[in-house]
Length: 242
View 1 (cartoon, rainbow, N blue to C red):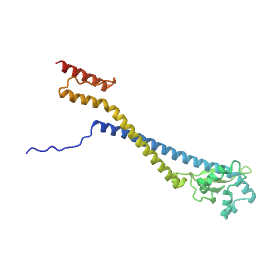
View 2: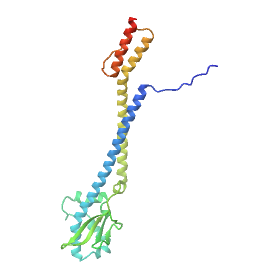
View 3: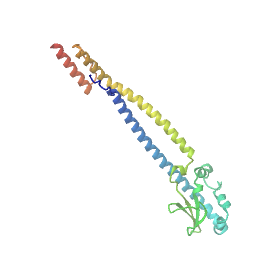
View 4: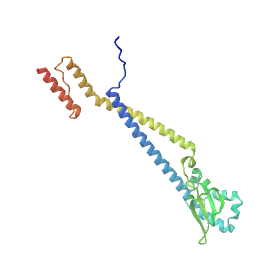
């Protein structure tokens, strides 16, 4: 018995070129998306930390006045209400209150603030301050009487609302999907444009093999495909003469 050959699907050049162009476009889009996300995360965290630093600079004079009025920090050690009173937006601060006072509350900077005495001991606010905390001195009559300390934001889930992060990811997926769709359309158009003269040469080759020696191809370019078309036309002319 004659063995039946196994039929295997082998993708043609058109499909291979389309896949190659699409894969390259997707990789470039993914790399750009990852770079943009990393840049956004670092820039956003830096912005949030800068908001906290500005908040400390605005609170330092208020705390200095508080120290002068009470003669120390003992009232803040035993009263969280007084600490929260100092954290509330105040019209006494310079600058617009919507950006100067409300923004730290919205970004969570107030919850990362803590007050230390001159010896570095915790007085009020965030109790888990570490060595990498940002510090702002509180000065009364030229003497440092305490420190405002801010724990820097280390990651986006700690710094911002998780819902905001999910919205950003969802938007990134929509943009990525649109980019992939656009890349597929462009890859298809480019593939068709590149393979059209190749298919024309292949069709002319089949006609030439079937005895149509007058078969010619239209040469419209001067690249490799154009030179291939010129070589085919010379071959067809030689066969026609002979």
